[in-house]
Amino acid sequence: MSYLIFASATEAAARSAAAWDALGYPPGATQYLWAWQLHPSDGRAALIIPPTPQGAQIDLPPASYEALLTETERAALVTTLSADWFPETM
Image 1 (spheres, one colour):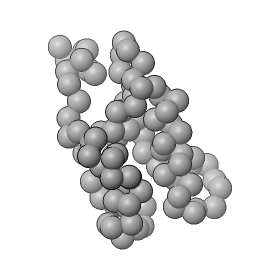
Image 2 (cartoon, one colour; image 1 turned 180 degrees about the vertical axis):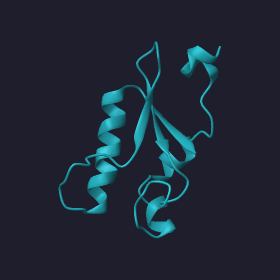
Image 3 (cartoon, rainbow, N blue to C red; image 1 turned 45 degrees about the horizontal axis):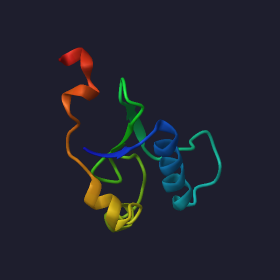
Image 4 (cartoon, one colour; image 1 turned 180 degrees about the horizontal axis):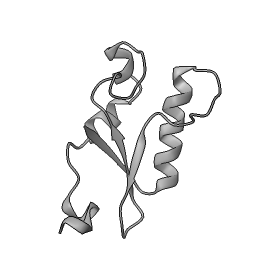
């Protein structure tokens, strides 16, 4: 799993919705490709990005799935979130 951190849940939701729209699926109940994790205190949100399209529950070639992220976004991916994202485990 990878995470892409945004300044707010609104930004994370908009990016997830843009990725869903890029797939070209007809409108339906789903509006977002990726879920997000809210930071408990500072307002940030991290998109939760599965490593494969199957993990995201979509039928897409891996290269096309990777292309949903920009080069800058791929470089900003992190593989773990720090403990402060999960205060109940601290």
